[in-house]
Length: 120
Ligand code: AMP
Image 1 (cartoon, helix red, strand yellow):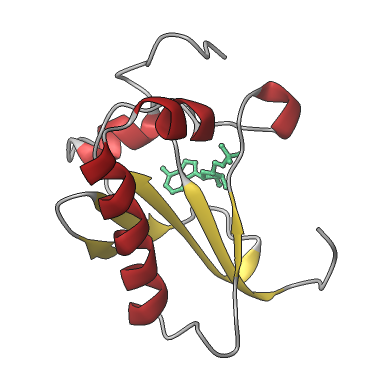
Image 2 (tube, helix red, strand yellow; image 1 turned 180 degrees about the vertical axis):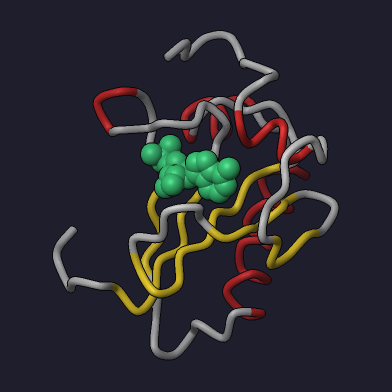
């Protein structure tokens, strides 16, 4: 995985362009949220920014302030729209091969109603 150069043909870039379908659950000016293709929990949604960021480090290091705020407000809106404040949810984001990151476009996993209650 190239952690320095954004690949404009990665799967999530194609979803953002409308070139690939997704099961959308939320969209605003800053984020798109859709169901994970291979869910690891009964609720498994991915939230991605509308911008070319490879990973969490790239996003937190280089995104402008309006995007940083807009992304997190969007994330909260997804959580609210899915009604997850109670019972609760887990957020996960991966950076690089050592974390198991598969798609080189920054994304946050929202997981709720887990198949197995393991930690982390
Ligand atoms: P990560 O390992 O953090 O990069 O997670 C990538 C996630 O993207 C995995 O959970 C995949 O199941 C999911 N995924 C891959 N392709 C698609 C797709 N076309 N639509 C929805 N989710 C996808």
